[in-house]
Length: 334
Image 1 (cartoon, rainbow, N blue to C red):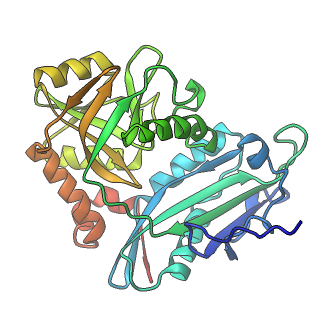
Image 2 (image 1 turned 90 degrees about the vertical axis):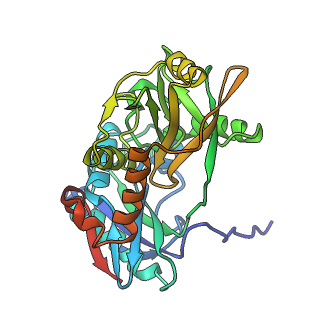
């Protein structure tokens, strides 16, 4: 029987790939490649069989003939932590960012102003049991994914965990199987995403998004440890602090959140995400009840949101105001 290969893909045609050489204990120089796994790895790869894959989601912003790889050092450090959690080697920062440069410069057609980058490290060898073959590959993919979101409808998941505690702060492919299935179920019911809780009912994060709330004049967000350390989350905290709106990172029980919405003490609930940006939550469903939230942003949050847009889309002028963020980023020429 003849099988017709599927060629349609979200990703642009060029990828940059770097393979790990055990003899050198390092990754080789990245090179351009077709976006096809068939000649890059085997079907028995540990990434396919056992989920040994770590990845990042990053943004590149383009202004005139320059492009900004936003907070590339933060993304690399988080990838290194994810790789360590999976006992995989992580490429050096130079290799990491060189692959991103290659895919940006080879795929850019002069039209778009924002790109989404997906760096991946995966176990390319495979045996009967995982991690028997020290073979790894680093690849960087690129797409024009750029959703336009007004506000979100969120449902609180009360029965299933997002992931196991050991991987709660790790960006690994295995985390997204369960969360994707439950999020799809929520979307079929008319919601956009899921708000996850820990085993004691404390809010953690939404699927692919961190969460913040404005309650009694304070800006709160769940503390690190049981959530992914989002790069946009970190940026929003930096920008809020610069504008006098310091963020309190603390455990927040779901009943505290719901009671605050009912009483009017929670005036704003919003999410941060590299892929989706900074978005207002207009409706929250908890158990059998739905709670509507206001759509107006408190001034300090609205200002930080606008500064986020300016520092990314109006660089280098917008970025120049935030030297600490600039030092964590890379600028290249298209």
